[in-house]
Image 1 (cartoon, rainbow, N blue to C red):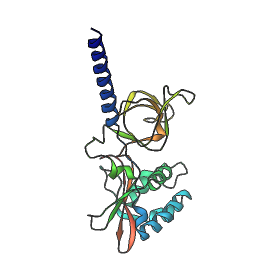
Image 2 (cartoon, rainbow, N blue to C red; image 1 turned 135 degrees about the vertical axis):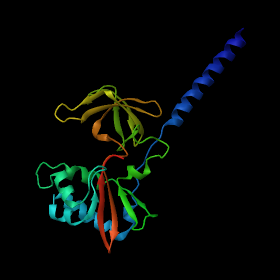
Image 3 (spheres, helix red, strand yellow; image 1 turned 45 degrees about the horizontal axis):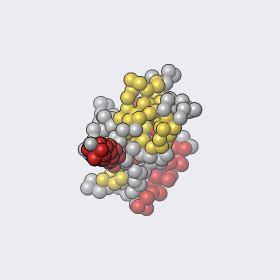
Length: 228
């Protein structure tokens, strides 16, 4: 009888360990990649553009736009539309923060394209192709606190780095001052870790991205769009 109990205990322990291992194996991450620094001309171009964006230099930014820049999947495109859409001359334009985030988070070349297309941030191309970009998002930083409750004083239950996650919007904390925005997101990693993270650390792979092409020896921004 004692041997049977020991056998059952060992079997149960083995099943539990196997379950833990399977859960751990499901965890997936999308680590930052920056191929932009491998091309001397693009690296220089990007550095100047980042500086212009930080200064909110409208003239410079408009000057690097492609005449047919894609601004959305429903519009006609073009520089005039870009300026109107982003209210580029307004001191409250959201363009600068969104574009700076995109430009300072790596990216990848699509070398099969004619003009050696480069798109940023890294999450756009690097996100796993077998995962639905509408269903999954990612932690967009290193060592992000996963908290038990949506509160900076709440217990940290884990630290996440570039993990793929699912977001439970129904139980997240919306920003009452900005429609459609959130302060805290309730998330679950593929490995089963659950909790709340500050919304600024979670990003969809099809959030805003910028693409650039070299035309007549000059880099131009040909796309600045979100969605799919």
